[in-house]
Length: 368
Image (tube, rainbow, N blue to C red; front, side, top):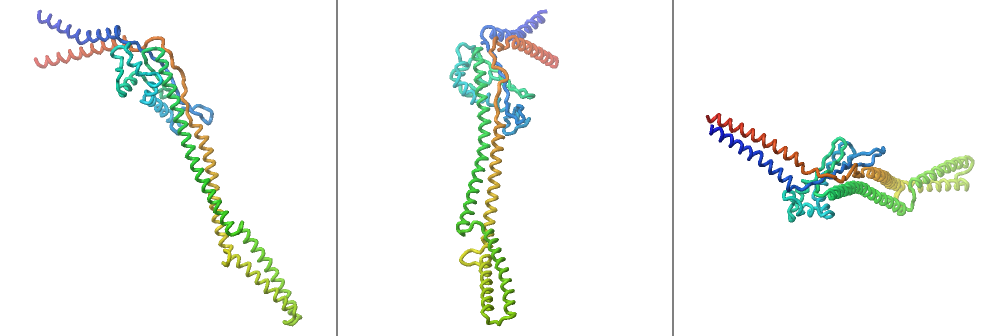
């Protein structure tokens, strides 16, 4: 009987030490020491201009598709939880002073001289970012030890995230347009160089268009050949009734020789190299220069169209972070969840005590 009584007492003391005492300590902490925390809720969405007039949600980046929406939200979430955001909050709201206030309970208070890493870890304990994959909508929940401060903190985070999204979108748009503008500048220089080469070739040969010049020479030669044919016909007619030494016959022969000489001279302009470059070579050079100029012109016009398209595309890809709701001004303290935490600990310790008792009983049975 005595042994049973001692065993029962030991079990009760063990239960009190393992289950009741930690539960009572946690309850006493929440009741007497813990500082109330207020939660401000803000909901955000990344919105972009759609060419059809519908809102898209992709900062993507430069990837305006459905998968870009999740990437946009993840980008915003990463920035909100980054040291850059913490530095901004420290500069604007002195967040370190709020976390290390002497009015806070010891378990909630951060050391005033805490390191940057510890400061960031403390910040992440009180800021939560959730993403609704269906929309996706970004839900920002900020905890603070003062209801008004919680709202200001949530608003400051949302405002800085808005500027971040705008800066990223505008920066990408500027880089895209700047790249196309650089290509346009290259094609513009090439067009100017090809134009200068063609003008120099014209000035050097004192000729605007050798093709037209060649056509004019061909027309002259054609006219001279017709005149030569008539002159030969007239010469045959004169020789039919005059002697070869007659003045009219001699004169007609000289005329024919002069026409032939003029024809040879005109032909020399086309194919023979003399004091000036032959027309056929000039035609080839001019065609090469004109072709190069035409290609440069086409490339330049294509670059102009690309620039306009890039500007339009860049304007469509600029995104904005829009507040769907909030930041809310909390009316009551939602954190810490005192009843929930105490109840959870109580049931967990009971389960632990039960499992431990079963293990001990099993070990004793094996030992016996």
